[in-house]
Image (cartoon, rainbow, N blue to C red; front, side):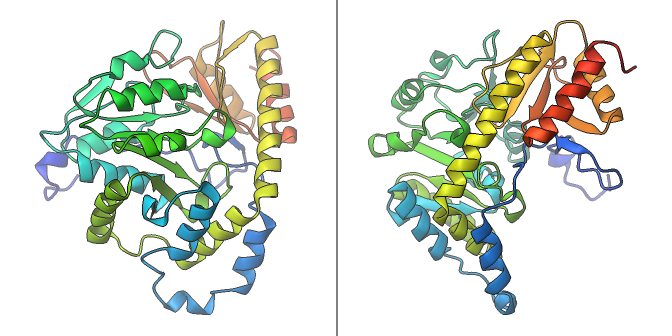
Length: 356
């Protein structure tokens, strides 16, 4: 580092994204990307509109996409905020509602950006241990006297927390904001969106990156009371008012409007997930009950890092976390049926000792 870096940031450990190889072609099952292209309507609209207008700033109010989402989700427009990916939404949350006096709590095994943002913004963070089976004990969050952020379903475990538990968490923390990060909710479970009318302290955030095949477009969103969204907008317009580009706004609208494509391809991914999970269990893997577009699994006789490296040698990338309690686990993104067949064939050969 240079001698100019702020001393407050000297010990900051940044978020580490999954590998994005450039030189070799892999079957990429490591970054929870969608295995199919976006809706054909996205391609059509990007091929025919707005290219010449890239010289102009996008709408800072993001009205076209907000209107489409308002109609789709049954919310008022003032209950919706868009961000440059859900990571920006999370950053706005930390900036708006947390400080040295207003602390934060989240699971000890969860999305890696939560501790990074806590450290970046100098916020006291309480990491609450998951149960032995990696589930969240909702009671650990009752009357916490902190703001709270919970990924549901959780990553990298894939486990889902029931709505009644989320409601009790919001109910017992009325003076703090509870953010439910629903990046993977479309792959299983019910959204906390239905609880918004009852709890002014509840925020729900999501993304177009996972279930809508638009990771490269960087579209995140937050749902909440008009007052909470107004607070987040204050941060947005003080930080990055033109945070969603013109083409991403169009792609988002096209995706929302093609509900048949959305639902049919979700069903394909869920079916492939369940088939892959069954096959891994037949190979003596322990696999959590994932409600996401990935699986979280470990083998009873092989270390996670060894499996990760052997798969990589064969041209298949999965995610390995060198972290206490989960170092023997792999997070495996669900690809196309053909990709998962090749993954399982390779994994079978590794487990049987045919590949060294």
